[in-house]
Image (tube, rainbow, N blue to C red; front, side, top):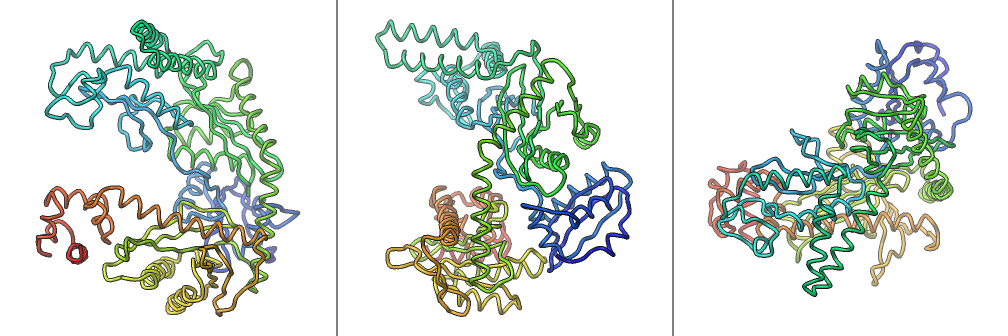
Amino acid sequence: MKDFKEKLSLVPTKPGSYQMKNKDGVIIYVGKAKNLKNRLKSYFTGTVTGKTRLLVEDIDDFEYIVTSSELESLILEITLIKKYDPKYNILLKDDKSYPYIELTNEEYPTLKIVRNVKRKKNKNHLYGPYPNASAARKTVNMINRIYPLRKCDKLKKEVCLYYHINECLGYCAKKIDPLEIENMKKEIIAFLKGDSSIISKKIETEMYKASENLNYERAHELKLMLEDIDTTLKKQKIDLNKNYNFDLVNYYYDKNYLSIEIFFIRDGLLFGRHNEIIQTVADEQEEVIEYLIKFYDKSIIPKELYIPEELDADLIANYFNIKVIKPVRGKLKSLVNLARENAKEQIDLQEETLKKDDALRMDALKELANLLHLDKVSRMESFDNSHLFGTFYVGGMVVFENFLPLKDEYRKYKISTDVKDDLSAMKEVLYRRYYKVLMENLIKPDLIVMDGGELQVSVAKEIVTSLGLNIPIIGLAKDKNHRTNYIVNDKGERVLVSKDSNLFLFLTRIQEEVHRYAISYHRNIKSKGALASVLDLVPGIGTVRRKELLKKFGSLKKMKEATVDELAEVVSLDVANNLFNYLKDL
């Protein structure tokens, strides 16, 4: 650990944001403080453990920016985190947003599940969030079976199967009374807000009718629907006596672990809950605020947020521009306490497992560093290719930090048309990746992990060396049964690792993950259909350009007949050449 005593003596006691850097000058952590001097001193004095110890060991320098208020320091902190994505700042385990149910505001409405709710201009027709995605799907399917809403994305010229099974009113061919649609919408909205009486009565009527017609299978299905509705509402029921709509957050901190619990209250019902346990680096209250900012970056920000007494309500309210309340008594205070109890319960359930897993990972990292004669191994990047019968190559890169996946940093690569073998494909991917690392001063990995033996390691070393980089490389070689057999270093030497060791287990997890990622990328492309598959595999063609090409040419046959100049009317000349060459080889 470096001695920062002299530099710390010059730090002011004002609010601001600070940035920790590693030996390569890369920002690895961004924080904020009311008092910069006290906060920065806390990292380098006394005993630090867990994730904080790893951070401190990685710090080679620090900088700070003084601000005029704590709110300014928070805004600056979040801006810098978004810009640099430092590895020690909070990373949400699951960065996917929760699904919502949308009843579209159209002449002929549809009911569907949506995720990217931040892009929606009108959020009044969204209901959720649903932490349980299967519950959301089940709800949409049930309502769509009971109510004959429009089922197709675009109106067709004639009625389809849904009309004939009474699950659509035939909007494409029939004249529908707007009042009938409005009544359907009111009943569906009431249900989505927690009033199940109308839908339950409809299901009950249908159930008895099916039973009278000796359709016992349908009657049983409807009976299960009723039971599902009853069970769900019982779980959601809380005694607030008002149709409150707010989110509520509380947390529990214990020995570097922070458990954050969020309740979603909609129309007086506990609509859902979210929990996540993270390892902390800074003060736990500041970590909670940073977590909330990242969480609501992908979810709808509530109009009201209830928080425990120790969190800074003014800071949160000013940042989100919402009403923030600290209940001090009554049912709402009890609900805040309940959220804390739930947060504590999650830590109690998982803490021993988390500690054990952390210890195993740290031991494996030390063993790996010793075997490779390195000072430290933390960040690893791994690569694999996938192809279709020796053509249409794609590449995948996965990133692991301390043997934990950083899914936000995974990358997919479309590979140029003239590549016809695995090694050439790998050369292209590695060159593109580390040329970008060099040009954009991105974080360099401590280790490159190749899916393969001596040949793959040699190729990786050739590319990395040609760019003037010095990054250690290992390969995970497989035997004839496709099982990882041994490890080879960048000198071509086999490194002995017991197949029963935790290190071997963690390395094979990386290998399996990069293989899965590359294969799934190819499968996703192929699943879109033959024409879409070809277009998606051409470098330079994304969703927008694919749609423009399909709009202009309409079919693969016409696209193949087009000249480069004709293709270049839609895309750039370079991309048109790529596409022309792809189509020529089909």
